[in-house]
Image (cartoon, rainbow, N blue to C red; front, top):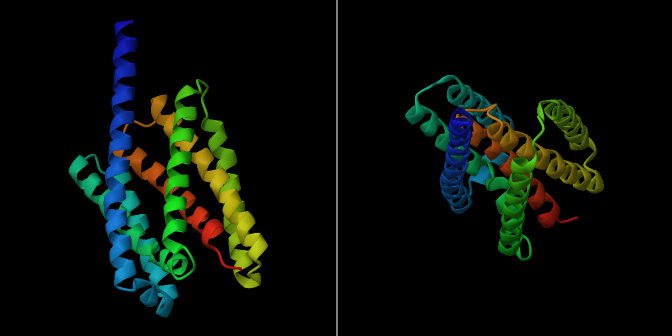
Length: 219
C-alpha cells in the first residue's frame, strides 16, 4: 500500500510539473507572436517560404531531439522555451492573416479560449480513463498521416471546403493526442515532465492553428 501511494504521488508530481512547464511555455510563444506581428515577420516568411519552412523544421527537430535526449533539466527547459518561442514566430503568418480581417482580435481570442477549453476537457478525460491507451496512439498516428497527405494534396487544389474539413479533423486528432499524452503521464508511461510538456504543447498549438483556420478563414 505504501509503495502504491509513493508511485501515485510520483505520477501526480510529474503531471503537475508537466502542466506547469506547459503553462510557462506559452509565455515565450505569446512574446514571439507579438514581436512577429509587430515586426511583420510574416513578410519575411512570404518572401522566403521554402527556406523559412526548412529552417523552422531543422531547428524544431533539433530542439525536439535535444529535449528527448538530455537528462539535464536546465538544458531541456531551455530547449522547450526556445521551441515555444520559435513556434510563436511561426504563428505570425496565421495571426497576421486573421488580424487583417474583420474582428481579427476577437477571432484570435475565441480560438485561444476554445483551445483552452479543449485542453482542460481532454485532460480531465485522460485522468479518468483507467485503461492503457498505447494502442490508441497507433490510430492517431495513422489519422495524422492521412491529414498530412490531404493537406499536401490540397496545396495544389486549394479547395476551401477541404481545408475546413482538414482543420476540423486536426482538432479531433490532436484532441485525441492530448488524451493519449496526458494519460501516458498518469499511467507512468512518461516520467519526464519537460518531454511530456513538449508533446502536449504540440497538441495545443495544432488545435489553436486549426481553430484559427476555421474561425478566421475568409472564403
